[in-house]
Length: 219
Image (cartoon, rainbow, N blue to C red; front, side, top):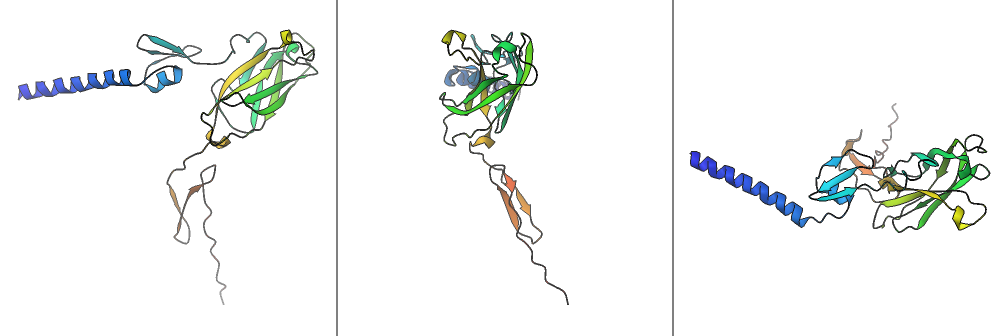
């Protein structure tokens, strides 16, 4: 009995080691997202880090830290899922604006521009201090897109047109399924008053309307 139990324990341990080695050896890990998907632990730093064996991957948050002394974004945050219409808020020093505004651009995973807008100052921009801003942009995403990642670009307004005065904050974002990427609805059913059933459908996966029941007039 003890011998059989010992053999079972050896087999279980061996299978566990085989699975772990197979997972690490057969699943290529080349970036932060793949490291997380492989089940590796996250380091709660900013930006977050993930370790796979002797490899260390850092989450891409754009150039937020490099630009923190001149422009800061409150929403959306790096790698946040976004949908249309998108409200962009934050604060920037007065030098980032011209005539109380600056351009905002949204690109897809191929760096193709899919939306543009204007961020406007919410107070006097003629200052060297931080000034709150807000922008609203609408966009659609190709349903056949290879990837659901994009970049939100907040460009310094440069009326001179000189390249040495160009600057931008780049924020990686993820397009939500409701912006155009296909979404699979759950197979739930709703029982209607007439006894029939309807399922979820449409971009928001809402229940379809029940059949109308015609009332029979009483004598």
